[in-house]
Length: 83
Image (cartoon, rainbow, N blue to C red; front, top):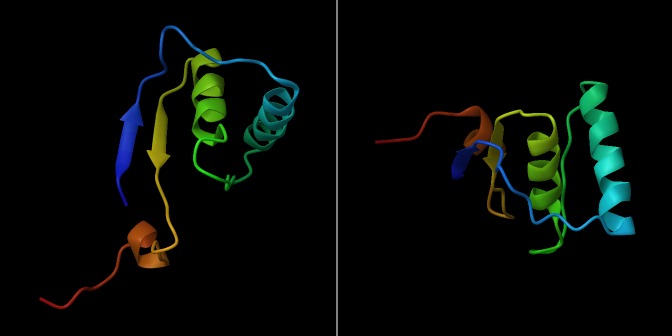
């Protein structure tokens, strides 16, 4: 899958709606407890924006993995492919 390494943006267009703040709190709690996170949802619902905003607030680099229904474990872990 495509991988993007992104530096946190200097200016954010983040809008702190109640839904966004609740999701941000859940994601931040998982990060603080060093737990893995899988965000799923419809395109454009704010998954990437929330994580970008948290990375911006904490001055952390962000690596984005774009997954789809066609993504399987070998895409993430590697594997042998016939030549």
